[in-house]
Length: 370
Image (cartoon, rainbow, N blue to C red; front, side, top):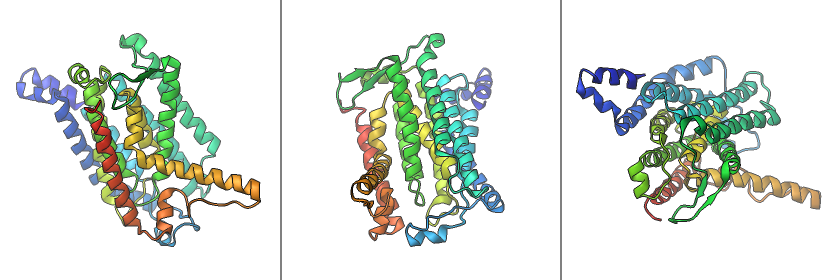
């Protein structure tokens, strides 16, 4: 909306044409979302506390977590509000990619909200039944995949459907339309659940999300530029550059939320935040054709997910074979294993942040190293 307003003002005052620059609007988007998040944070936390929307803590987890019981959760709604308002203010609302990612983000947020609401308000420890949770995630993921695959019929820009292998100039694998749909679905739903599994310690999930979103803003800018994409040998995706606004909003809103989520956390984001942010990153990665780069930069999310899969699979296998379930890790996800091993919560979080910084830099190197 502000973009349209400044474009109208630029007709008489040329100075306002500066707001057409994508880089400036990306910076303003991040700053606006940060301000929204910081300003609304105390109000949202008070409202959650007044409604007694408090976190339930696992009794079999690290004993240091018992003090977290009752801490307001569902704070991810603060992030979603900041992202939505900022994107509507600074984004090009005629861009189909902006609307696709925004709808996916809010859609997964609604699923997470209902899951959290059942857990903390109705005191249902299972929340939304797993089959229904997966159903709605699948419906949203598949809907986004089909839209991205077939919306080109009216736009005139056919989608890039190759799976790009980073670090190589000519290696890519054609997927075809239906292969693209399948990959898009898996990336969106998989990333959503991976971020959700990682969100178990104060600040653990939000900071990697901020760093990955900021890095993908660079990829989106390059993909949306015919000049830069050709120079860097990346797929040209007309209109993808506008995703920088939404990604800047994610980074700014995430930093604002971290102000309240840093140890000791005043609020947790819950499924409403984790599911939506993961889905947003997955959707962006598919649009700019950098799914493998997301896998690299989100290595912490990947390992956390694998730790749960391996732990559960091994427990079931040994219970069936020996009559008694055995564990590989002291506790899953992986961050709890390190806590059980003697690491302090803050050590786990900061070390995982450091690993993510290295992985994000490695992912960014694929822009040139090929």
